[in-house]
Length: 367
Ligand code: MRU
Image 1 (tube, rainbow, N blue to C red):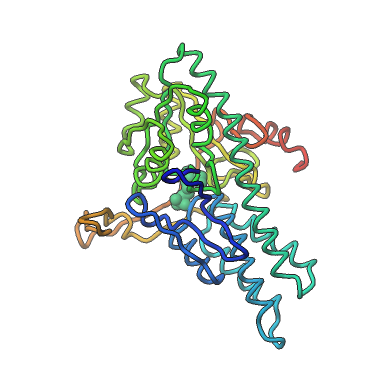
Image 2: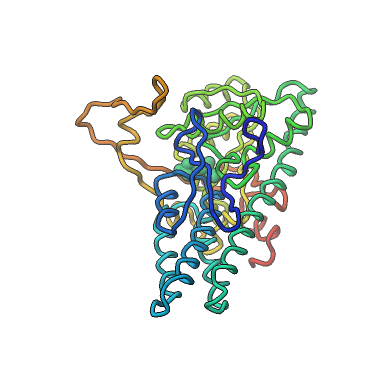
């Protein structure tokens, strides 16, 4: 995507030197970080320098490359397989909910297990690039399929503004390029459809107001930031034509784990008859579990994200306490929306219902 007119992915390498956009400083400061070790990549994922399902999948792919490189350059007495296994463990533990991370680690472990020791670095780099490229390609196709849905909504309104509500950041910052929830929006906007986006601010880390609003602004898409609790009111008053969100893990039966607060939007959409779409690459589908409410691990983050608000003051990033100093806070990072509240899933293969039959019809190789 374009940042001040220049094309960027969220993570990339130049001759094996891995760089990423450090999202902690956005929207005020655009910083690029170079990551040299698997330990630093695990920190970047855990502390959310890079975040979002597809982006942390690609980061994990590159993290495994860094683990493989450190093993191939280490002394002959060390076991290169050992550092790869240790790297995998470290990365897998960095964030629990998004399945793209373990998907990328598993892919690397599988390919490296068949690779001779002297080729581990090269093979892992090729695979990391493939994971990143596939993520970008899937998001582009999601844009294509989802863009058609927005085109239909636009025709139904005789070309009047289509209002889309989104939650958190499932934009290009959350993937390698294009994004999932935002890809149809960019596609529709580029095709000249009159579109406007309601951006949930997404407390406590404000991925909506900090990241999605910034991204949409970079692309020139009209948007308005709203407090998280506003969506239901807008839907009751006919001011939302569709909700499109991303997901961090979707089960084979259509349960959708996404940023905390998504379930409440789905309930409001269901009550008001607003279509609720979930956009995802197939790397986000967890084929091994079925009941998302029972089986998806929900990350709990530190209470300081709730007790403090972070912003920029006089050119410096600052955090201020916004709660009584001694009140405890609980910080559940994700919730699970059941399939009955999801109108359709949008993946790289098309648009389909959120149930096992429809999902397997789209992915027959997973039967
Ligand atoms: O905690 P985050 O910011 O990594 O949350 C993940 C997400 O980006 C959102 O849940 C998003 O809507 C899912 S798609 C990447």
